[in-house]
Structures are given as structure tokens and as C-alpha cells.
Length: 412
Image (tube, rainbow, N blue to C red):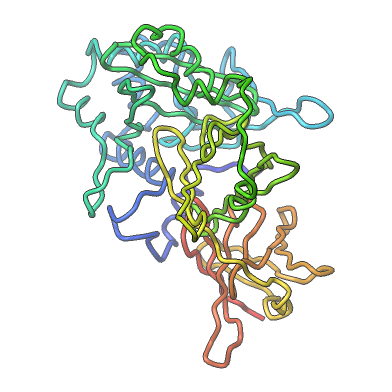
């Protein structure tokens, strides 16, 4: 992630992709590449760069005079705010490495973005039909909705209709939420990677729309307040929640228990506390999300639901797997991806399988199923190894929250 990522780099990379993640409209997977390609379509059709087109057709008509798309990583921008993250030594600089637009690289201010939010109720650019299309959730081939519209997520917050989207690049954190029925919007920016901009935005919503929010205690209020009435759990109930739950291929939520406290860890993320809201619902500390455990009679808990950002996603329990039965040496060697023009070396160090790359920290791979491993890097979260008719490993497919089954061929 220290490399500069340009539009040219992305287009070359995309042109070498061989497979779809899934058939169009069969599933939803968040895709920055799609927005990058869409920006390129705008540029080629208009004959202008995306930055020039948006300046002439959006920013200038709305008098967003301090807004631009940053498509040149060497460009100097007056009054630019730099971003940071913290570690045990204090704050450090978090470098923005993007030189591409469409999915990212909007430089703006809270005041300017307010003018964009106002345009949804007081049209200066676009028209009512366009806004209606933007605000309408997409429908999958099976007839289900997933909350996504055109660059926005449509849902409810405390029984109020909400349209929102957040973003994060380097240490920048942003959130724009709109309540169209109330013609009310909240915008929160931060330049610290640890800041929860969405959580802060909703705290502001709670203040300004207090009179419109239903009277009973809301789940978000339960998530944030200190509950003096401790929830008492029956014997063994917390133990029944412990385990690994697969949200997406390779993206696993691991639930552990220590001294009556539940903890959760998502693939590639830190361990966080799960604070009880009820016997089956737990708030994820530091994140505006909730995990709900779904009991199934004598079978126990085989399913959890993650409630976040107006969406509900299901994760099923992974069956226990005896990792000691795996011969790690079967999976060693050099694995090359033609699509990425890059290779990883898989080797055994001590009693662990490690993926090594010249520009990355080592990635630890833990066996989770037969010939399937979980990686501790967000972009390398599930590895499915492929065997030939002689039972020899010939390659692997890597999946994460943003890509499925990216093929690597074993070359030695």
C-alpha cells in the first residue's frame, strides 16, 4: 500500500483479469474498480478528465469552490489537511497513495459538501428523475435488495429513512448521511484513522432529530450507554457463542470468551470487546455495529447476524477442524498470479505456513478446512488450494471481502 496507485496501473491490472467474482446482479460485493471504470467512461465520452468534467458540471454550478478530484499525486493543494494514525509511540503520518479517481480522491470541505447535500432537496444540477434513480436500492436477480443504491446505501436509522455513505483512505475518515423526509444532513470529517465518523454523525442526528425518534429505547442508544443493570447469562450460554463464523469466503468472525466477557475478531482486524445488549445481542466496541446470536434449539448457535450500516449480514458457524492433521509441507512452493504479475513464496516456519512477498510483511496462514487456509491480512483472507488427480498441489485461489477466487499457479 506504499506504492502510488494510478489510473494507468489500475486499467492495466483490470485488463488482465480473467474471471468474474460472480454473474452480474447475482450477488453484491463492494467494488472500487467499478467506480474507477465509470469515471473513465465519463472521461472518454466527455473528452475531459474526470476532474475537469466534475469541476465544470458539478462543483462550479454548486459553488463548491474548495472541491476537486485529486488525480495527480504530485499536485500541491492549498490548505490540504494531512492524515495520521496512532500506535504505541504516538501519532504517525498516514500517506495518501492514490492518483486515481471515481472511487476515491475527492478533496473537499464540510461547507462544500453541504452544498452537494442541499442539491438533493433544492435542485440546481440534475433533475428529480435522476435523484430518484440515485436513491432507489438495487435489486438482485433473486429479487432481494442489499441496501445499495448508486453510490449510496439506503435504509433506516431509528425508524427514520436514511441515505448514507462513509469513506476512508489513508488516515482520512468521512461520513455523509441524509434524512430526505426531514431535509436534514450531517457531514463528519476526520484526519485520524481511529476516529469513528459514522458513530459521531449519528450522535449528532440523535440530538437534532430527537423529537422524531421513537420513544422506546433504541438499540443504538443501548449500544452507547453504560447499562447499570448487568445482564446475567445462564450457565454455558456464552460458551455456546464461542467459535468461528464465516461472513464471506475467507472473512471470518472469531468469537472468544474470557472471564465472562465476549470478544470478537474479524479477519485482518484487531480483537474488540462484544458488550451485551441482551442475552443474544452484543454491541461491537468502537464500531457502530451489533452482533446477534441466533439460537437453534438443541443444535445451539449455528448462525450470527452482523447489523452494520443499515445492512444485516449472516455468518454461519464453521465446523471444528483438526489443524494438527494438516501436513503443511504439502502447500509450500512458489505461487504466481498472471493477473497480478506477482508471486508469493509459501514456506513452513516453525509450525506455521507463511506467505512471503518482497514488498509485504509475512502473512500467516492457518488451516480452517481441508486444503483451505485463513490469512491474517485483509487482502489475503482465504486460500483454497487445488490438487490434481495425483493429489499434488497445483495452485490456489485467494479470496477476500473484495475479490473471489484469484488464481495463483504453483510454479515449482
